[in-house]
Length: 403
Image (tube, rainbow, N blue to C red; front, side, top):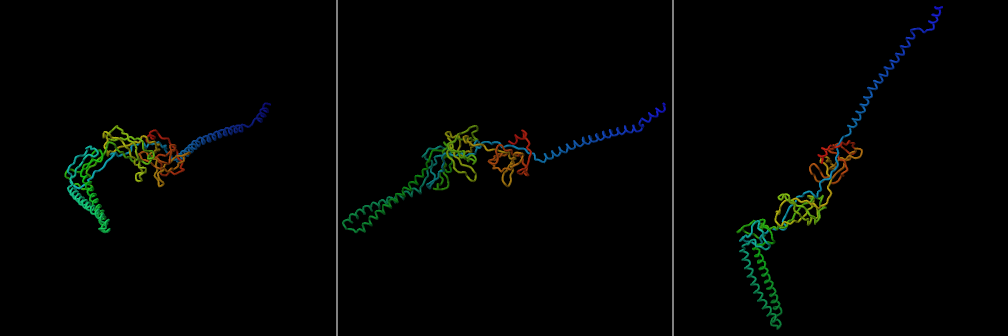
């Protein structure tokens, strides 16, 4: 019985080798799956950084392909009306003195630097030839007047005889005509005497106005030639002075008569003199594009020498200063001076500008940009309108250099 039961139990149990084969298959599948997962995870772990790096590199390349520029905005420059302008100081009145009579200088009564009054005697000229001509003219005048007197008596007598028919009307008319002829001759002789007397009066040279002698080109005994090119003396009145300054066109319209200006002279450091605008030329000179302006100033103590160089500031002239840009923002092209302005979205626009005064590092911009524009510093010649750029902020050091 035991043997039969054992045999039945053996028949009911599955064969041994089949059970072992099933467990191995499961384990193999688990190991294979784990390996596959590990491989997938490893591949993913390797590909993700590579993809990320590739994307970053592509973004960096795109970023590097966009030009990176530095920009600056126009700054208001110094007001032109407050800039010192070169000026020339001249006497209130000045005149060269020439000779009107031939002769030799007898006496010289003044010298350089002497102050004279109006009508004061300056020179005496010896005129022997003129004296002889004057004597001759006076003699001819006496002769002509004697002939006139005789003609008057004769014409009067013949007029009476003509009434009694003793002489003919023809003879009477001839005597009356002779009277007119002698009268004209006498008047001509008187005119010649007056002319020579006037020339003789020029032998005494007097001052036409009060002032100072600034030039003396003669000395006693020199030959004097009338209407010659040699200037004998030069007289200048320096109690008041005229200041002439050429104002640039950009501020010419802000200058008007009645304005006050400050005048400074290098020889008087620290001192400022006041001058008043009295007139302007009223037109811009084509060669220099400037307006000639005249100012008057008092000089009662002769502190300022006429002919000096001075600087003038028009403190009362009101004019808005023009914007300025660094010189390294300007592109000089066939179309004219241009600047590269960065608009919305980083787009570049080339703007043609009109330049004003050049201060070296900075240049005035008359038209073309305003204070809100962002202008590229050191622009490339390859930049054209529509180019996309990246704007970088300026450091404080760069900003201070651009100003």
